[in-house]
Image 1 (cartoon, rainbow, N blue to C red):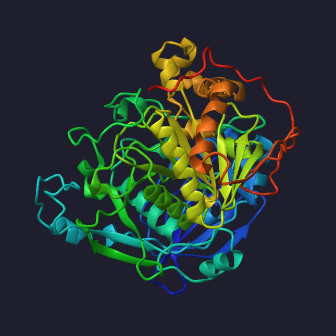
Image 2 (image 1 turned 30 degrees about the vertical axis):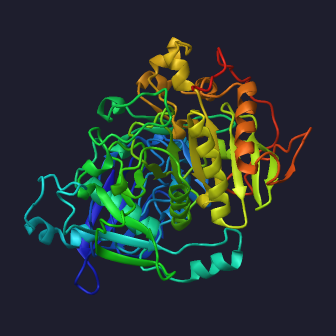
Length: 563
């Protein structure tokens, strides 16, 4: 239990709270402005907080003896019931922005030792713009259709926060990166704006369920697949309203699209700065003539901070990659500046559920299994982009990284995505490592499903393997599947997603022809007989040595390109 005492500070202006952590603890989520003293004893940890503002306090009882802990950089990251960023620090330090205290667990004999490793960080209080202006917004009379949506009926006069990012030319210039880091931004993009505003919407009850209450664990094994139990999400989630056998379909305004969401679900506008400096405006008019790109909450989240990036929302673009939109997604990853904040994309036919252009993103402070997988370099382009092939992973795919500029990398991947779209090949994309590493994963699970070629046992799990599942974050719908989760089971499911080796090579040939017009734009093609199996993980020191893995379960038939 957490025992709480209340006294007065030396100044007499603010109360002091003492939290006494024993073996059975409760998780508290709060936003204090100062942590000015800290005392640790063998049996109990005492933390003294000078509270200026508390925006929320949650008390979630947990049993510490069933917690699996992952240690990263001196911080114990809670991975069961949920590793929502490693409670106890900012995302830049392995934690979520307003979580100062969390339960650290493990085996019974290690509980106290791991609790002693908890690092309490000094963080400023984050008060959202919506909280500041709550009275003003409440008093404002409603207009338009009354739903406060993003259509012409409600847009006139509406204002939203605007974050104008600085375009970064080089992704490899260390000096430029240091200069950006040393210049204080007007607002912390990830900590205060994305995650801070996301938490504000959670307090306001805008989500269909509390994803932070979902049980999560890291599955034992070489790759560390992550399993989450999210019972009923498929019932609460918006159903698919289009065909799954066509990657390119026209936008249909009569079906659900993001112009129909309430403006309260939109966190901020996200645009390039006109003068080259990062800018933030708490209340900026919505420019209807120049359709804004916005970041909104996913009301059916699968993880902490789950948001949507919707490029040029008022243009009503269908779910298809274009050069401009993909570059915007890379800029968002670069602006977040945290390897644990990733963006993903699902094409139609690869489990996108809304035919309105969008990327997904969320924060999870553990490496994804796909990021640990070894790769084999197969080509280097003239602009410095390196293309590799995933090895020893259940889903075949390509990895893009490097490039002289962020736009070089973006353009190369965009061309590859457009090639897949034009050839009606469903695919998923994971944008990793602050936008510097991109996984392109053609898949055929929905096609196999439609043809009756997927094992009924796998179908019974009701798991739709989209970008997050393919990357190794398995969102499970049944308690049975969660309790029995294993690396072998995850491997078996994802192997059904993958193209056959023969088909994958055919698709690669299409991609390389589109990228380089044959080999004209390719500097060299690597023919590696003994591939380098060093893992390309988020941290260079986290290399995995070459070792055997479970045999890949081949699909019953190779996937066809639907014409």
